[in-house]
Image (cartoon, rainbow, N blue to C red; front, side, top):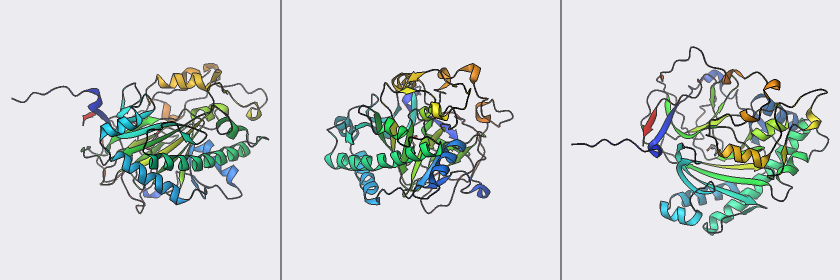
Length: 381
Ligand SMILES: O=C(O)CCC(=O)C(=O)O
């Protein structure tokens, strides 16, 4: 007799519907900004306004720094689980985690290290010294990229003080900076039709800004204003910048934090991504900057501090609209099409030959034609 037991919640990793590649849209969706070009400030502001996400090139970070972290991180993730836990502690939320993301039931096909950093020092001393060194060198470099982007944003917004946003994150004692290293092993689970296994569920980042780099394996997707999901072709030589919820509020909705998610790798190669999250000090007031407001313009949000927002975010699920409780309904902007109930969407997965897992040499790129998030069903793993 075969006993069938109900899978535990940790074994329930949902599927998501993957957009089909659309050759006509290749490269059209993900803005790319050369950070050293003369028009960079306007291009950054434009990308933050239109998509909330862009690829940054000419960032000045040497490949030896990113390569070293990638190599050391892969060595770490190859260690036995207990060793990884002993070295970094179980994620609560900082530390080593596997499949569980946060404590509210989100699961994905990944393992990760979530670390707090302060003045470029990683706050866990028990990590293998080579990994720690690689993380600290990487963090110092990527903070500079984040700082440069925040200066360009300030310039693009027309702020007199170009250092205002940068100083909220990088210039202040006690600011809240995190680095997350995600490892998505190749996923052996069969996914029907054009569904993929959730690597990291859809969410926005609550901080001001996030700066991401990955290896050559695809999987990241961003949600477009029309509700479609666009795959982000990996580019290990570039960084990808996300507008966070706090920047959305600071600009009174001029910039929009972008929902993003990751599909687990279907091919033979793992995905490794490293994300720097730039958050301010807990006491920092998050409210529209007076300098960006037009005469008579009302704030779209209630007042809150970063500490209050972070505590609220930790109580939510990844996919929740975390800014919702802070929106002032009377001043609310009309929801973008993606937030409105979809009509006539086909709930059944379609068959698709599109692979979401590609290498750097693949030219599979953005497609705007995908439908919204559809956890097709939960799948035991
Ligand atoms: O792994 C990725 O590419 C993105 C992961 C992510 O969004 C996150 O860790 O918040």
